[in-house]
Length: 361
Image (cartoon, rainbow, N blue to C red):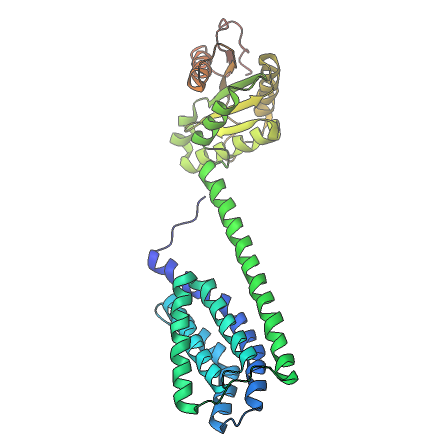
Protein backbone atom coordinates (compact mmCIF):
# COMPACT_ATOMS: atom_id res chain seq x y z
CA UNK A 1 0.00 0.00 0.00
CA UNK A 2 1.46 3.41 -0.89
CA UNK A 3 2.58 5.74 1.88
CA UNK A 4 0.21 8.50 2.92
CA UNK A 5 1.43 11.83 1.53
CA UNK A 6 2.76 14.19 4.18
CA UNK A 7 1.47 17.68 4.73
CA UNK A 8 3.71 20.08 2.75
CA UNK A 9 4.57 22.05 5.90
CA UNK A 10 5.52 18.86 7.75
CA UNK A 11 7.55 17.60 4.79
CA UNK A 12 9.41 20.92 4.54
CA UNK A 13 10.23 20.78 8.25
CA UNK A 14 11.49 17.19 7.92
CA UNK A 15 13.75 18.20 5.02
CA UNK A 16 15.18 21.03 7.12
CA UNK A 17 15.75 18.72 10.09
CA UNK A 18 17.50 16.18 7.87
CA UNK A 19 19.73 18.95 6.52
CA UNK A 20 20.66 20.01 10.05
CA UNK A 21 21.51 16.41 10.98
CA UNK A 22 23.58 16.01 7.83
CA UNK A 23 25.61 19.14 8.57
CA UNK A 24 26.04 18.51 12.31
CA UNK A 25 28.87 15.95 12.08
CA UNK A 26 30.89 17.79 9.37
CA UNK A 27 30.53 21.08 11.25
CA UNK A 28 31.74 19.46 14.49
CA UNK A 29 34.71 17.90 12.72
CA UNK A 30 35.43 21.11 10.80
CA UNK A 31 35.52 23.13 14.01
CA UNK A 32 37.96 20.68 15.60
CA UNK A 33 40.44 20.36 12.75
CA UNK A 34 39.81 23.92 11.55
CA UNK A 35 40.30 25.19 15.10
CA UNK A 36 43.67 23.46 15.16
CA UNK A 37 44.61 25.16 11.89
CA UNK A 38 43.47 28.60 13.09
CA UNK A 39 44.96 28.14 16.55
CA UNK A 40 48.41 27.39 15.12
CA UNK A 41 48.33 30.70 13.25
CA UNK A 42 47.01 32.65 16.25
CA UNK A 43 49.72 31.14 18.44
CA UNK A 44 52.40 32.88 16.39
CA UNK A 45 50.69 36.28 16.73
CA UNK A 46 50.04 38.71 19.60
CA UNK A 47 46.48 37.43 19.95
CA UNK A 48 44.28 39.11 22.62
CA UNK A 49 42.79 36.84 25.31
CA UNK A 50 39.23 37.58 24.23
CA UNK A 51 40.04 36.19 20.77
CA UNK A 52 41.27 32.96 22.35
CA UNK A 53 38.08 32.84 24.40
CA UNK A 54 35.95 33.22 21.27
CA UNK A 55 38.08 30.56 19.53
CA UNK A 56 37.50 28.11 22.40
CA UNK A 57 33.76 28.78 22.64
CA UNK A 58 33.23 28.29 18.91
CA UNK A 59 35.10 24.99 18.87
CA UNK A 60 33.35 23.62 21.96
CA UNK A 61 29.79 24.83 21.55
CA UNK A 62 28.92 26.25 18.14
CA UNK A 63 28.10 23.02 16.26
CA UNK A 64 25.82 21.83 19.09
CA UNK A 65 24.14 25.22 19.43
CA UNK A 66 23.61 25.45 15.64
CA UNK A 67 22.06 21.97 15.52
CA UNK A 68 19.81 22.67 18.52
CA UNK A 69 18.72 25.98 17.00
CA UNK A 70 17.86 24.40 13.63
CA UNK A 71 16.09 21.43 15.16
CA UNK A 72 13.72 23.48 17.28
CA UNK A 73 13.30 26.41 14.91
CA UNK A 74 9.91 26.82 13.22
CA UNK A 75 11.73 26.54 9.89
CA UNK A 76 14.79 24.25 10.31
CA UNK A 77 15.90 24.78 6.72
CA UNK A 78 16.06 28.55 7.02
CA UNK A 79 17.69 28.25 10.44
CA UNK A 80 20.43 26.07 8.97
CA UNK A 81 21.00 28.53 6.14
CA UNK A 82 21.42 31.23 8.80
CA UNK A 83 23.85 28.93 10.65
CA UNK A 84 25.90 28.60 7.48
CA UNK A 85 25.85 32.38 7.21
CA UNK A 86 27.22 32.57 10.74
CA UNK A 87 29.94 30.06 9.75
CA UNK A 88 30.92 32.34 6.88
CA UNK A 89 30.87 35.49 9.03
CA UNK A 90 33.03 33.87 11.70
CA UNK A 91 35.33 32.41 9.06
CA UNK A 92 35.96 35.92 7.72
CA UNK A 93 36.69 37.12 11.24
CA UNK A 94 39.29 34.37 11.74
CA UNK A 95 40.97 35.24 8.46
CA UNK A 96 41.54 38.74 9.81
CA UNK A 97 42.47 37.45 13.28
CA UNK A 98 45.21 35.31 11.68
CA UNK A 99 46.53 38.46 9.98
CA UNK A 100 45.66 36.88 6.62
CA UNK A 101 48.17 34.06 7.11
CA UNK A 102 48.00 32.65 3.60
CA UNK A 103 47.75 28.87 4.07
CA UNK A 104 45.20 28.72 6.93
CA UNK A 105 43.21 31.59 5.38
CA UNK A 106 42.91 29.73 2.08
CA UNK A 107 41.95 26.54 3.93
CA UNK A 108 39.22 28.30 5.94
CA UNK A 109 37.76 30.14 2.94
CA UNK A 110 37.82 27.02 0.75
CA UNK A 111 36.09 24.79 3.28
CA UNK A 112 33.40 27.36 4.03
CA UNK A 113 32.72 27.78 0.31
CA UNK A 114 32.55 23.99 -0.01
CA UNK A 115 29.85 23.84 2.69
CA UNK A 116 27.83 26.61 1.05
CA UNK A 117 28.02 25.06 -2.41
CA UNK A 118 27.00 21.65 -1.05
CA UNK A 119 23.85 23.12 0.49
CA UNK A 120 22.77 25.88 -1.89
CA UNK A 121 24.90 25.87 -5.00
CA UNK A 122 26.32 29.00 -6.62
CA UNK A 123 23.87 31.43 -5.04
CA UNK A 124 24.67 30.17 -1.55
CA UNK A 125 28.40 30.30 -2.32
CA UNK A 126 28.16 33.95 -3.42
CA UNK A 127 26.17 34.79 -0.30
CA UNK A 128 28.82 33.04 1.78
CA UNK A 129 31.61 35.01 0.12
CA UNK A 130 29.78 38.24 0.91
CA UNK A 131 29.48 37.25 4.58
CA UNK A 132 33.13 36.17 4.60
CA UNK A 133 34.10 39.62 3.39
CA UNK A 134 31.87 41.23 6.03
CA UNK A 135 33.40 39.11 8.76
CA UNK A 136 36.86 40.00 7.54
CA UNK A 137 36.08 43.73 7.73
CA UNK A 138 34.73 43.30 11.28
CA UNK A 139 37.89 41.42 12.24
CA UNK A 140 40.11 44.12 10.73
CA UNK A 141 38.19 46.77 12.67
CA UNK A 142 38.52 44.90 15.96
CA UNK A 143 42.06 43.56 15.63
CA UNK A 144 43.97 45.74 13.12
CA UNK A 145 45.92 42.88 11.54
CA UNK A 146 49.48 43.25 10.29
CA UNK A 147 51.04 41.98 7.09
CA UNK A 148 50.26 38.37 6.10
CA UNK A 149 52.79 35.60 6.51
CA UNK A 150 53.28 34.39 2.95
CA UNK A 151 55.41 31.35 3.82
CA UNK A 152 53.75 29.27 6.56
CA UNK A 153 55.82 27.98 9.41
CA UNK A 154 56.27 24.25 9.91
CA UNK A 155 53.79 24.34 12.81
CA UNK A 156 51.09 26.07 10.77
CA UNK A 157 51.69 23.72 7.85
CA UNK A 158 51.41 20.58 9.97
CA UNK A 159 48.34 21.86 11.82
CA UNK A 160 46.65 22.72 8.50
CA UNK A 161 47.10 19.23 7.04
CA UNK A 162 44.26 17.57 9.05
CA UNK A 163 41.81 20.15 7.70
CA UNK A 164 43.13 19.85 4.16
CA UNK A 165 43.01 16.04 4.16
CA UNK A 166 40.26 14.97 6.56
CA UNK A 167 37.48 17.45 5.92
CA UNK A 168 37.17 16.97 2.12
CA UNK A 169 37.20 13.20 2.64
CA UNK A 170 34.32 13.45 5.12
CA UNK A 171 32.34 15.77 2.84
CA UNK A 172 32.97 13.41 -0.08
CA UNK A 173 31.78 10.40 1.92
CA UNK A 174 28.64 12.22 3.08
CA UNK A 175 27.96 13.25 -0.52
CA UNK A 176 28.38 9.62 -1.57
CA UNK A 177 25.88 8.46 1.07
CA UNK A 178 23.46 11.14 -0.07
CA UNK A 179 23.83 10.05 -3.70
CA UNK A 180 23.13 6.44 -2.71
CA UNK A 181 20.03 7.49 -0.79
CA UNK A 182 18.79 9.52 -3.75
CA UNK A 183 19.48 6.57 -6.06
CA UNK A 184 17.41 4.28 -3.83
CA UNK A 185 14.61 6.84 -3.76
CA UNK A 186 14.72 7.12 -7.55
CA UNK A 187 14.56 3.34 -7.89
CA UNK A 188 11.62 3.21 -5.50
CA UNK A 189 9.80 5.93 -7.45
CA UNK A 190 10.37 4.05 -10.70
CA UNK A 191 8.95 0.90 -9.11
CA UNK A 192 5.94 2.82 -7.84
CA UNK A 193 5.32 4.35 -11.25
CA UNK A 194 5.12 0.95 -12.95
CA UNK A 195 3.61 -1.22 -10.19
CA UNK A 196 0.06 -1.86 -9.07
CA UNK A 197 -0.30 -0.80 -5.46
CA UNK A 198 -2.51 -3.70 -4.38
CA UNK A 199 -0.87 -6.71 -6.03
CA UNK A 200 2.69 -5.55 -6.68
CA UNK A 201 2.43 -6.67 -10.30
CA UNK A 202 3.03 -4.28 -13.19
CA UNK A 203 0.27 -1.74 -13.68
CA UNK A 204 -1.72 -1.71 -16.89
CA UNK A 205 0.13 1.18 -18.53
CA UNK A 206 3.58 -0.31 -18.01
CA UNK A 207 2.44 -3.83 -18.90
CA UNK A 208 0.89 -2.63 -22.18
CA UNK A 209 4.14 -0.79 -22.95
CA UNK A 210 5.98 -4.11 -22.63
CA UNK A 211 3.45 -5.77 -24.95
CA UNK A 212 3.99 -3.02 -27.51
CA UNK A 213 7.78 -3.32 -27.19
CA UNK A 214 7.63 -7.08 -27.77
CA UNK A 215 5.51 -6.89 -30.91
CA UNK A 216 8.29 -5.88 -33.37
CA UNK A 217 10.65 -8.66 -32.23
CA UNK A 218 11.15 -11.79 -34.33
CA UNK A 219 10.71 -14.31 -31.52
CA UNK A 220 7.30 -15.89 -30.82
CA UNK A 221 5.20 -14.54 -27.98
CA UNK A 222 1.77 -15.11 -26.51
CA UNK A 223 -0.37 -12.97 -24.27
CA UNK A 224 -3.08 -14.19 -21.91
CA UNK A 225 -5.84 -12.21 -20.29
CA UNK A 226 -7.14 -13.83 -17.10
CA UNK A 227 -10.36 -12.90 -15.32
CA UNK A 228 -11.52 -14.25 -11.95
CA UNK A 229 -14.96 -15.80 -12.24
CA UNK A 230 -17.79 -14.37 -10.12
CA UNK A 231 -15.39 -12.13 -8.24
CA UNK A 232 -18.17 -9.65 -7.43
CA UNK A 233 -19.79 -12.26 -5.18
CA UNK A 234 -16.72 -12.30 -2.97
CA UNK A 235 -16.88 -8.53 -2.47
CA UNK A 236 -20.65 -8.63 -1.92
CA UNK A 237 -20.67 -11.57 0.49
CA UNK A 238 -17.38 -11.11 2.37
CA UNK A 239 -16.39 -7.51 1.85
CA UNK A 240 -13.72 -5.74 -0.19
CA UNK A 241 -11.00 -6.67 2.29
CA UNK A 242 -11.41 -10.36 1.46
CA UNK A 243 -11.65 -9.43 -2.21
CA UNK A 244 -8.36 -7.55 -2.04
CA UNK A 245 -6.69 -10.46 -0.25
CA UNK A 246 -7.98 -12.81 -2.95
CA UNK A 247 -6.35 -10.66 -5.63
CA UNK A 248 -3.08 -10.63 -3.70
CA UNK A 249 -3.25 -14.41 -3.27
CA UNK A 250 -3.80 -14.89 -6.99
CA UNK A 251 -0.89 -12.54 -7.75
CA UNK A 252 1.35 -14.60 -5.49
CA UNK A 253 0.32 -17.80 -7.27
CA UNK A 254 0.99 -16.21 -10.66
CA UNK A 255 4.51 -15.30 -9.57
CA UNK A 256 5.12 -18.80 -8.23
CA UNK A 257 3.77 -20.42 -11.38
CA UNK A 258 5.47 -18.29 -14.04
CA UNK A 259 8.49 -16.70 -12.35
CA UNK A 260 10.46 -13.94 -14.04
CA UNK A 261 10.08 -15.38 -17.55
CA UNK A 262 6.53 -14.05 -17.85
CA UNK A 263 5.62 -10.37 -17.42
CA UNK A 264 2.61 -10.17 -15.11
CA UNK A 265 0.32 -7.17 -14.93
CA UNK A 266 -2.96 -6.19 -13.35
CA UNK A 267 -5.05 -5.31 -16.38
CA UNK A 268 -8.24 -4.26 -14.59
CA UNK A 269 -10.15 -4.83 -11.37
CA UNK A 270 -10.03 -8.65 -11.27
CA UNK A 271 -8.41 -9.04 -14.68
CA UNK A 272 -4.72 -9.86 -15.17
CA UNK A 273 -2.40 -9.86 -18.16
CA UNK A 274 0.41 -12.28 -18.91
CA UNK A 275 3.03 -11.51 -21.57
CA UNK A 276 4.90 -14.72 -22.38
CA UNK A 277 7.95 -13.90 -24.54
CA UNK A 278 9.62 -16.61 -26.62
CA UNK A 279 6.55 -18.78 -26.05
CA UNK A 280 4.46 -20.45 -28.73
CA UNK A 281 0.73 -20.85 -28.43
CA UNK A 282 1.05 -24.56 -27.59
CA UNK A 283 3.61 -23.84 -24.88
CA UNK A 284 1.41 -21.10 -23.43
CA UNK A 285 -1.60 -23.45 -23.48
CA UNK A 286 0.31 -26.07 -21.50
CA UNK A 287 1.61 -23.54 -18.96
CA UNK A 288 -1.84 -22.04 -18.43
CA UNK A 289 -3.36 -25.50 -17.91
CA UNK A 290 -0.79 -26.24 -15.22
CA UNK A 291 -1.60 -22.93 -13.58
CA UNK A 292 -5.32 -23.72 -13.54
CA UNK A 293 -4.63 -27.05 -11.88
CA UNK A 294 -2.56 -25.32 -9.18
CA UNK A 295 -5.26 -22.69 -8.71
CA UNK A 296 -7.82 -25.41 -8.05
CA UNK A 297 -5.88 -26.70 -5.02
CA UNK A 298 -4.33 -23.44 -3.84
CA UNK A 299 -5.32 -22.38 -0.28
CA UNK A 300 -7.67 -19.38 -0.36
CA UNK A 301 -7.72 -16.49 2.10
CA UNK A 302 -10.20 -16.94 4.97
CA UNK A 303 -13.16 -17.21 5.04
CA UNK A 304 -13.25 -18.61 1.49
CA UNK A 305 -13.38 -22.40 1.18
CA UNK A 306 -11.60 -22.39 -2.20
CA UNK A 307 -10.03 -20.00 -4.67
CA UNK A 308 -12.35 -18.75 -7.40
CA UNK A 309 -11.89 -20.20 -10.86
CA UNK A 310 -10.71 -18.09 -13.77
CA UNK A 311 -11.42 -17.68 -17.47
CA UNK A 312 -8.46 -17.11 -19.78
CA UNK A 313 -8.08 -15.86 -23.34
CA UNK A 314 -4.91 -16.55 -25.35
CA UNK A 315 -3.60 -14.77 -28.43
CA UNK A 316 -0.29 -15.43 -30.16
CA UNK A 317 1.74 -12.78 -31.94
CA UNK A 318 1.30 -12.89 -35.70
CA UNK A 319 3.07 -11.18 -38.62
CA UNK A 320 -0.38 -9.85 -39.54
CA UNK A 321 -0.79 -8.11 -36.17
CA UNK A 322 -0.66 -4.39 -36.94
CA UNK A 323 -0.24 -3.04 -33.41
CA UNK A 324 -0.38 -4.14 -29.82
CA UNK A 325 -3.96 -2.87 -29.45
CA UNK A 326 -5.06 -5.42 -32.03
CA UNK A 327 -3.11 -8.13 -30.22
CA UNK A 328 -4.78 -7.24 -26.92
CA UNK A 329 -8.19 -7.13 -28.60
CA UNK A 330 -7.67 -10.67 -29.88
CA UNK A 331 -6.85 -11.89 -26.37
CA UNK A 332 -9.83 -9.99 -24.99
CA UNK A 333 -12.18 -11.59 -27.54
CA UNK A 334 -10.83 -15.01 -26.58
CA UNK A 335 -11.42 -14.19 -22.91
CA UNK A 336 -14.99 -13.17 -23.73
CA UNK A 337 -15.50 -16.49 -25.50
CA UNK A 338 -14.24 -18.37 -22.44
CA UNK A 339 -16.66 -16.55 -20.16
CA UNK A 340 -19.53 -16.89 -22.61
CA UNK A 341 -18.91 -20.64 -22.90
CA UNK A 342 -19.37 -21.16 -19.18
CA UNK A 343 -16.24 -19.75 -17.47
CA UNK A 344 -13.33 -21.68 -15.94
CA UNK A 345 -11.97 -22.24 -19.44
CA UNK A 346 -9.13 -21.35 -21.75
CA UNK A 347 -9.99 -20.03 -25.18
CA UNK A 348 -7.64 -19.29 -28.06
CA UNK A 349 -8.24 -16.39 -30.40
CA UNK A 350 -9.74 -17.65 -33.65
CA UNK A 351 -10.16 -21.26 -32.47
CA UNK A 352 -13.59 -22.95 -32.31
CA UNK A 353 -15.22 -22.79 -28.92
CA UNK A 354 -14.98 -26.54 -28.65
CA UNK A 355 -11.20 -26.21 -28.38
CA UNK A 356 -11.30 -25.08 -24.78
CA UNK A 357 -10.56 -26.73 -21.49
CA UNK A 358 -13.53 -28.31 -19.83
CA UNK A 359 -14.77 -27.01 -16.50
CA UNK A 360 -12.31 -28.25 -13.87
CA UNK A 361 -15.03 -28.67 -11.27
